[in-house]
Image 1: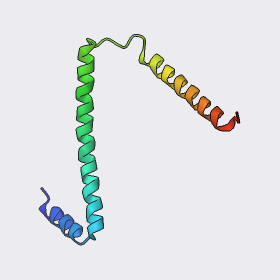
Image 2 (image 1 turned 180 degrees about the vertical axis):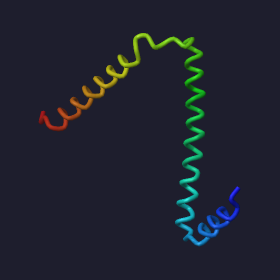
Image 3 (image 1 turned 45 degrees about the horizontal axis):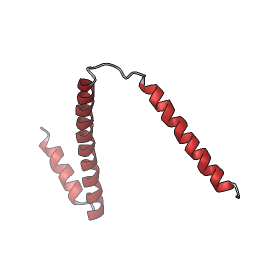
Image 4 (image 1 turned 90 degrees about the horizontal axis):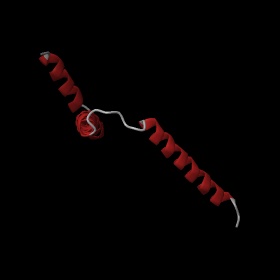
Length: 87
């Protein structure tokens, strides 16, 4: 382990303003949160896979995604129509 490097980093961090130190702290926690979230997603994926016995979605997931996309486009078209049509 490079203790001299660690000591230098600590000195550098201590020389920062409180705001800069808070930013470093937030960035470090964000990475930890992301890693935790990634592990939770992997566990969820395994649970779903176990529940469906590792069989692919039937119909394929692309069909569901396309359906959701079409519904969203229809909703957007309706909103735009309502905004610009004077009734």
